[in-house]
Length: 176
Image 1 (cartoon, rainbow, N blue to C red):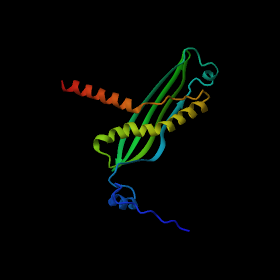
Image 2: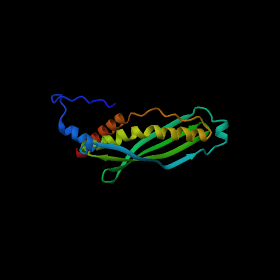
Image 3: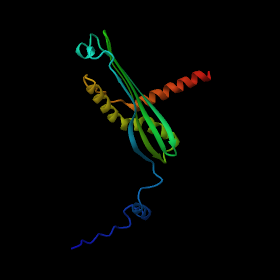
């Protein structure tokens, strides 16, 4: 037996336009941001002193890690974002391993105001991509015979803010 639907009173704050638009699909004027694909664009793992470095890695190991974000517009509303990762592990006896990775993703970004597109591409996109890149790095170092390199989360918002402030300082120095 079918239940009767209750009538919605007119004064509930809902507009008839919103009700009609809900049946038509998502609001076409709203901002849209989504991932289209993720991929490894370039990958290099070198362990020049293996197998010696696996047996006796040496004293005072040091690990250098560098992560950069790059964004390129490919087409109207389609952007490629790349996480450029470099890591070098070395000790007193020499290089343990070197890793270079460009982890990429394609994003669809529609109806995003111009003053918000850079933060979306340099903060939101890498935040989405980072866990996947982290897994690739951990698997790569483990498969190379070493302990998995488990990267700490990166605050891409703070990184973007710092780079924006540095750019302002450099612009001010150029204008002087």
